[in-house]
Image (cartoon, rainbow, N blue to C red):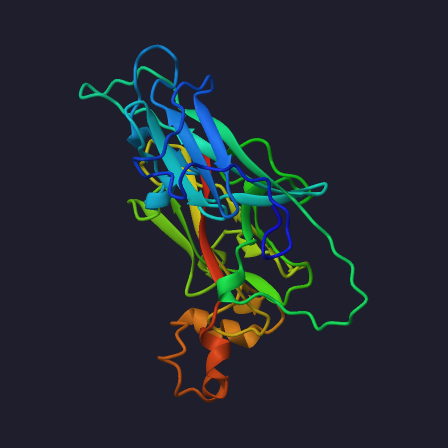
Length: 348
């Protein structure tokens, strides 16, 4: 099928448009314990309650698409007496968009986390099942000259956020999530969308925690104030944003660390990524403290001066240089997403 955006799709025809409707007749006698349906805008994951084919039913609460989070659409719900269902938009639940030849590929992980019983015992292991939806790309050539039109907020369905640990060459993903205390972690965030689109990636905030929940305690906020890498100001820290090479990529280094007097050695990094227009301002920036001053990775250091206080254009409107900025340039962002890395094991 060819969609309104001129892409071609491989579509599975469902008995009803809403797969959560009780009237939907989906066969329950599948051989595979997990079945994926790919529609034009979403991936639908059907999970057999007897996941291990041992007669014991797991529960819907034990499944999530992507890393465990509070987003309802990323969690499983009851579909029938023997199956659970997750229906999520293609770009939700930390899905990653990549290009494989002439295909667009949305990939994710179905996470199974067994719940402990009232005695604190679990009898099965955590599992991660790869989930993938592939779409044929279609190219058209025209002799008519047209002005490029970039997507607006409501048309960014093809954005795919990525968040990875990288090797020292910054070219390949790091296969190991194990570090020694003080070892430098290379962290790379990026997004994928139309080539040469006039947008830039920034990191609004980042938190290190001992659980996938960024609000858990203890936690350490190391990027705050709309892009200020505050850990770079801590003595003996090597944290820094790397020089920007591509607008859609942001790279950062920081030391692996542990929380004092906590026996847990697995940490999670949660960041709020944001895609913004090209013009730099105090709300959309990436700043490192170096040489006793704040520096922007994008070359306009004055946007970083507020890192010492509060980067809020409303509170700073009386300052001349900010009041002269167009209101749109300090308040508008295009798309944002929360991404998670972990668990990262840190050995003392």
